[in-house]
Length: 252
Image 1 (cartoon, rainbow, N blue to C red):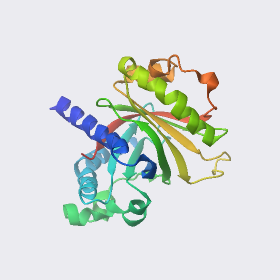
Image 2: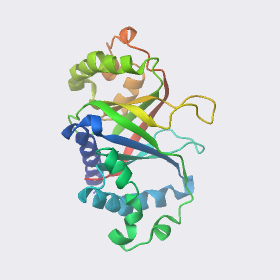
Image 3: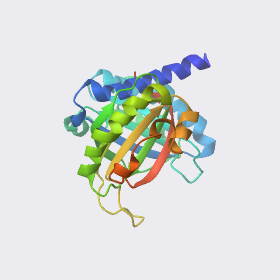
């Protein structure tokens, strides 16, 4: 039963990423929403997300109000970190603007009012981060692990050109032998400029989907799909945050 649920979850995340290449990538919007869940509430939080919120998200997808949705859990997080990440995929800006609050539809879908469904969790949610998809390699198989890389390239336009002409072809060649299953690039819509910590909000991000944690670690250490990449030819991505996440649940 456990293996069945794991495989089902991986299939759901695979479908989310397949959506990135099944229609116009340039119009799709990723929304990342970090949340900090206390350690003693993690089991309850995951149960609510898996058994209830997933059904609300699936209803939104089925009714054309959302492209896809997933919940990711941060690997190696501390009690002070945002330890979960909601990922929302919208097909275009119109869907973002017109159908943004799909999760408040719990009473219609489940017969449970939002304040009752979400009221027992003392979670701290960060702001939402909106990105426009630029390019992607579709997943070749199921993926349970994903690396999210957020940075401030010196030149975003050149970063995108390098990603398309150098990084993408290299990763396509490495996929059969590295454990990488998919990859993509997006640029920031909002927020932009300086952040409250005194730095700057990231202007671009990439994601790397892998088959297992071992290959994720190899990738982060310069191996797996990264091995042989001509990094000296790339406009520096200046990644400030590189997080490893495991897929918890998502839409079908």
